[in-house]
Amino acid sequence: MSCSDVPLATGDALDSLDDAVAAAAFRRLVRLLRHRHDAANIDLMGLAGFCRNCLGDWIAEAGDMDKESGRAIVHGMPTAEWKARHHTPATPEQLARMEESMAKNP
Image (cartoon, rainbow, N blue to C red; front, side, top):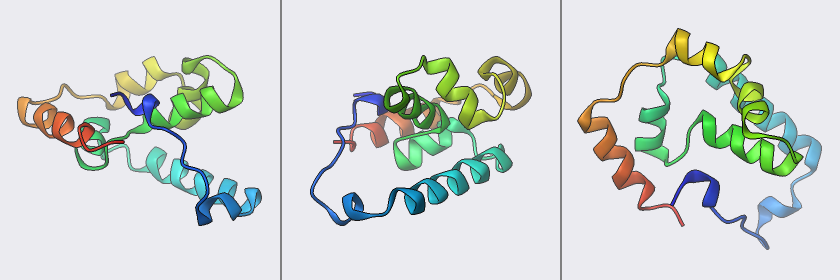
């Protein structure tokens, strides 16, 4: 299962959250991830089962746009530029943690 396959939950308190409040919280999260480029996507995947690319893909899906456009919103720049500046190759341990974490996603 990829992070793009996570189903949208319905019927919980999150659904009653005001859209402006949710949007403000989301923007704060994205800005934090832009600032904390030291938190590698592979480590986010290994810990939480999602990463910046997942958020970008969710934006693309919700906004009816291509994945690159959604990811560029989250990265604050084109994905290729973000990778050139911040991406490091994953270690076997990081990949194993990611696989284990992704298995926990619904």
